[in-house]
Length: 252
Image: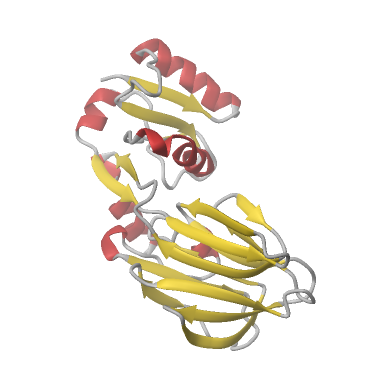
Protein backbone atom coordinates (compact mmCIF):
# COMPACT_ATOMS: atom_id res chain seq x y z
CA UNK A 1 0.00 0.00 0.00
CA UNK A 2 1.18 3.50 -0.83
CA UNK A 3 0.07 6.40 1.37
CA UNK A 4 0.03 10.16 1.09
CA UNK A 5 0.05 11.75 4.55
CA UNK A 6 -1.06 15.35 5.05
CA UNK A 7 -1.73 17.18 8.30
CA UNK A 8 -3.24 20.29 9.82
CA UNK A 9 -1.00 22.96 11.32
CA UNK A 10 -1.41 21.50 14.80
CA UNK A 11 2.01 20.63 16.32
CA UNK A 12 0.67 17.22 17.40
CA UNK A 13 -0.70 16.51 13.92
CA UNK A 14 2.58 17.51 12.27
CA UNK A 15 4.54 15.33 14.68
CA UNK A 16 2.20 12.41 13.97
CA UNK A 17 2.52 12.91 10.20
CA UNK A 18 6.32 12.76 10.41
CA UNK A 19 6.07 9.61 12.53
CA UNK A 20 3.76 7.90 10.03
CA UNK A 21 5.92 8.93 7.06
CA UNK A 22 8.99 7.49 8.78
CA UNK A 23 7.18 4.21 9.36
CA UNK A 24 5.18 3.82 6.12
CA UNK A 25 6.88 6.13 3.60
CA UNK A 26 5.37 9.01 1.64
CA UNK A 27 3.99 8.68 -1.89
CA UNK A 28 2.90 11.49 -4.19
CA UNK A 29 -0.82 12.21 -3.78
CA UNK A 30 -1.53 11.24 -7.39
CA UNK A 31 0.31 7.93 -7.08
CA UNK A 32 -0.87 6.97 -3.60
CA UNK A 33 -3.42 4.23 -2.97
CA UNK A 34 -4.84 6.10 0.02
CA UNK A 35 -4.91 9.71 1.21
CA UNK A 36 -4.37 10.08 4.96
CA UNK A 37 -5.44 13.46 6.44
CA UNK A 38 -4.22 13.90 10.01
CA UNK A 39 -6.04 16.43 12.21
CA UNK A 40 -9.67 17.13 13.02
CA UNK A 41 -12.97 16.99 11.15
CA UNK A 42 -12.37 20.40 9.61
CA UNK A 43 -9.09 19.25 8.12
CA UNK A 44 -10.72 16.14 6.66
CA UNK A 45 -13.31 18.35 4.96
CA UNK A 46 -10.54 20.58 3.60
CA UNK A 47 -8.76 17.49 2.26
CA UNK A 48 -11.93 16.24 0.57
CA UNK A 49 -12.24 19.60 -1.20
CA UNK A 50 -8.54 19.68 -2.11
CA UNK A 51 -8.15 16.12 -3.39
CA UNK A 52 -11.61 14.89 -4.47
CA UNK A 53 -10.54 15.13 -8.13
CA UNK A 54 -7.97 12.34 -7.56
CA UNK A 55 -10.70 9.74 -6.86
CA UNK A 56 -8.70 8.20 -4.02
CA UNK A 57 -10.05 6.74 -0.75
CA UNK A 58 -9.58 8.90 2.37
CA UNK A 59 -8.67 7.54 5.80
CA UNK A 60 -8.63 10.32 8.39
CA UNK A 61 -6.62 10.03 11.60
CA UNK A 62 -7.80 12.07 14.57
CA UNK A 63 -5.43 14.64 16.03
CA UNK A 64 -8.09 17.33 16.47
CA UNK A 65 -10.55 18.41 19.16
CA UNK A 66 -13.63 16.45 18.02
CA UNK A 67 -12.68 14.05 15.27
CA UNK A 68 -16.14 12.54 14.76
CA UNK A 69 -15.28 11.75 11.13
CA UNK A 70 -11.78 10.54 11.97
CA UNK A 71 -10.18 7.29 13.07
CA UNK A 72 -8.11 6.81 16.20
CA UNK A 73 -4.83 5.15 15.28
CA UNK A 74 -1.98 4.99 17.79
CA UNK A 75 0.03 1.77 17.60
CA UNK A 76 -2.18 -0.18 15.17
CA UNK A 77 -0.82 -1.21 11.79
CA UNK A 78 -2.45 1.11 9.23
CA UNK A 79 -2.17 -1.48 6.46
CA UNK A 80 -4.23 -3.97 8.46
CA UNK A 81 -6.81 -1.39 9.62
CA UNK A 82 -7.36 -0.02 6.12
CA UNK A 83 -7.58 -3.50 4.60
CA UNK A 84 -10.52 -4.28 6.92
CA UNK A 85 -12.02 -0.77 6.92
CA UNK A 86 -15.64 -0.03 6.03
CA UNK A 87 -16.23 2.17 3.01
CA UNK A 88 -18.60 5.13 3.13
CA UNK A 89 -19.55 7.36 0.23
CA UNK A 90 -19.63 11.06 1.05
CA UNK A 91 -22.12 12.43 -1.47
CA UNK A 92 -21.93 16.24 -1.33
CA UNK A 93 -24.40 19.05 -1.81
CA UNK A 94 -24.23 21.42 -4.76
CA UNK A 95 -24.99 25.03 -3.85
CA UNK A 96 -26.00 27.65 -6.42
CA UNK A 97 -26.53 31.19 -5.15
CA UNK A 98 -27.28 34.65 -6.53
CA UNK A 99 -26.45 37.89 -4.72
CA UNK A 100 -28.17 41.28 -4.79
CA UNK A 101 -26.11 42.38 -7.78
CA UNK A 102 -27.12 39.33 -9.79
CA UNK A 103 -23.71 37.67 -9.49
CA UNK A 104 -23.91 33.88 -9.35
CA UNK A 105 -21.86 31.51 -7.19
CA UNK A 106 -21.44 27.74 -7.09
CA UNK A 107 -19.82 25.55 -4.48
CA UNK A 108 -19.74 22.03 -3.02
CA UNK A 109 -20.45 21.06 0.61
CA UNK A 110 -19.83 17.69 2.26
CA UNK A 111 -21.36 18.74 5.60
CA UNK A 112 -23.94 21.45 5.08
CA UNK A 113 -25.06 24.58 3.27
CA UNK A 114 -26.24 27.27 5.69
CA UNK A 115 -28.02 30.56 5.04
CA UNK A 116 -27.48 33.02 7.92
CA UNK A 117 -28.39 36.58 8.85
CA UNK A 118 -25.58 39.15 8.43
CA UNK A 119 -26.81 41.77 10.90
CA UNK A 120 -28.70 42.00 14.19
CA UNK A 121 -31.95 41.65 12.24
CA UNK A 122 -33.46 38.20 11.81
CA UNK A 123 -33.63 36.98 8.25
CA UNK A 124 -36.89 36.11 6.49
CA UNK A 125 -36.77 33.17 4.11
CA UNK A 126 -39.20 31.58 1.68
CA UNK A 127 -38.62 27.84 1.21
CA UNK A 128 -39.40 25.85 -1.93
CA UNK A 129 -39.07 22.10 -2.41
CA UNK A 130 -38.95 21.11 -6.09
CA UNK A 131 -40.14 24.62 -7.02
CA UNK A 132 -43.24 24.34 -4.82
CA UNK A 133 -43.52 26.82 -1.93
CA UNK A 134 -43.61 24.84 1.31
CA UNK A 135 -43.05 27.77 3.68
CA UNK A 136 -43.99 31.32 2.74
CA UNK A 137 -41.96 32.98 5.48
CA UNK A 138 -39.50 31.57 8.01
CA UNK A 139 -38.23 34.22 10.43
CA UNK A 140 -34.96 32.98 11.92
CA UNK A 141 -31.24 33.46 12.47
CA UNK A 142 -30.73 31.05 9.61
CA UNK A 143 -31.58 27.75 7.97
CA UNK A 144 -29.36 24.91 6.79
CA UNK A 145 -29.36 21.79 4.66
CA UNK A 146 -27.14 18.95 5.94
CA UNK A 147 -26.01 15.68 4.40
CA UNK A 148 -26.21 12.47 6.42
CA UNK A 149 -22.44 12.70 7.07
CA UNK A 150 -22.84 16.32 8.18
CA UNK A 151 -25.99 15.76 10.24
CA UNK A 152 -23.94 15.33 13.44
CA UNK A 153 -22.09 18.63 12.97
CA UNK A 154 -23.71 22.10 12.86
CA UNK A 155 -27.08 20.47 12.13
CA UNK A 156 -27.05 18.58 15.45
CA UNK A 157 -26.04 21.74 17.33
CA UNK A 158 -29.12 23.41 15.81
CA UNK A 159 -31.24 20.49 17.13
CA UNK A 160 -31.59 18.90 13.70
CA UNK A 161 -32.10 15.18 13.16
CA UNK A 162 -29.20 12.74 13.02
CA UNK A 163 -29.33 10.82 9.73
CA UNK A 164 -28.01 7.29 9.11
CA UNK A 165 -25.48 7.30 6.27
CA UNK A 166 -27.58 5.05 4.04
CA UNK A 167 -30.82 6.98 4.58
CA UNK A 168 -30.56 9.02 1.34
CA UNK A 169 -32.06 11.93 3.27
CA UNK A 170 -31.14 15.58 3.79
CA UNK A 171 -31.86 17.46 7.00
CA UNK A 172 -33.54 20.85 6.55
CA UNK A 173 -33.08 22.61 9.88
CA UNK A 174 -33.89 26.15 11.10
CA UNK A 175 -31.45 28.04 13.31
CA UNK A 176 -33.22 29.87 16.16
CA UNK A 177 -36.60 29.97 14.43
CA UNK A 178 -38.82 32.83 15.65
CA UNK A 179 -41.82 32.21 13.37
CA UNK A 180 -43.16 29.57 13.04
CA UNK A 181 -41.72 28.99 16.49
CA UNK A 182 -42.61 25.31 16.72
CA UNK A 183 -41.15 24.33 13.34
CA UNK A 184 -38.22 21.99 13.98
CA UNK A 185 -37.30 21.37 10.36
CA UNK A 186 -37.91 18.56 7.89
CA UNK A 187 -36.29 15.48 6.39
CA UNK A 188 -36.07 15.64 2.61
CA UNK A 189 -35.26 12.86 0.17
CA UNK A 190 -31.89 13.59 -1.45
CA UNK A 191 -33.51 13.43 -4.90
CA UNK A 192 -35.31 16.72 -4.17
CA UNK A 193 -34.00 20.25 -4.65
CA UNK A 194 -34.36 22.95 -1.99
CA UNK A 195 -34.57 26.66 -2.75
CA UNK A 196 -34.32 29.64 -0.41
CA UNK A 197 -35.46 33.15 -1.28
CA UNK A 198 -34.32 35.85 1.14
CA UNK A 199 -37.27 38.17 1.72
CA UNK A 200 -36.30 41.85 2.14
CA UNK A 201 -32.75 40.83 1.22
CA UNK A 202 -31.49 44.43 1.18
CA UNK A 203 -32.99 45.40 4.52
CA UNK A 204 -32.22 42.04 6.12
CA UNK A 205 -29.01 40.81 4.40
CA UNK A 206 -27.98 37.17 4.56
CA UNK A 207 -24.90 35.14 3.70
CA UNK A 208 -24.63 31.55 2.52
CA UNK A 209 -21.85 29.14 3.48
CA UNK A 210 -21.01 25.82 1.82
CA UNK A 211 -18.84 24.05 4.42
CA UNK A 212 -16.22 26.80 4.93
CA UNK A 213 -16.79 28.91 1.79
CA UNK A 214 -18.97 31.99 2.36
CA UNK A 215 -20.78 34.35 -0.02
CA UNK A 216 -22.50 37.49 1.27
CA UNK A 217 -25.55 39.61 0.42
CA UNK A 218 -27.41 36.65 -1.00
CA UNK A 219 -30.90 36.76 -2.54
CA UNK A 220 -31.48 33.21 -3.83
CA UNK A 221 -30.00 29.81 -2.97
CA UNK A 222 -30.59 26.40 -4.53
CA UNK A 223 -29.29 23.23 -2.87
CA UNK A 224 -29.35 19.66 -4.14
CA UNK A 225 -27.46 16.40 -3.72
CA UNK A 226 -24.90 15.54 -6.40
CA UNK A 227 -22.51 12.77 -7.40
CA UNK A 228 -20.04 15.46 -8.46
CA UNK A 229 -16.88 15.21 -6.33
CA UNK A 230 -18.29 12.28 -4.38
CA UNK A 231 -15.60 10.78 -2.12
CA UNK A 232 -14.94 7.41 -0.52
CA UNK A 233 -14.07 7.71 3.16
CA UNK A 234 -12.83 4.73 5.19
CA UNK A 235 -13.58 3.94 8.82
CA UNK A 236 -12.00 1.43 11.17
CA UNK A 237 -14.30 -1.63 11.13
CA UNK A 238 -14.24 -1.62 14.94
CA UNK A 239 -15.43 2.01 15.05
CA UNK A 240 -17.49 2.47 11.88
CA UNK A 241 -19.30 5.69 10.97
CA UNK A 242 -22.63 3.88 11.25
CA UNK A 243 -21.76 2.90 14.82
CA UNK A 244 -20.71 6.45 15.65
CA UNK A 245 -23.98 7.88 14.34
CA UNK A 246 -26.01 5.26 16.19
CA UNK A 247 -24.13 5.91 19.44
CA UNK A 248 -24.61 9.67 19.05
CA UNK A 249 -28.39 9.20 19.12
CA UNK A 250 -28.20 7.55 22.55
CA UNK A 251 -25.49 9.78 24.05
CA UNK A 252 -27.00 12.16 26.59
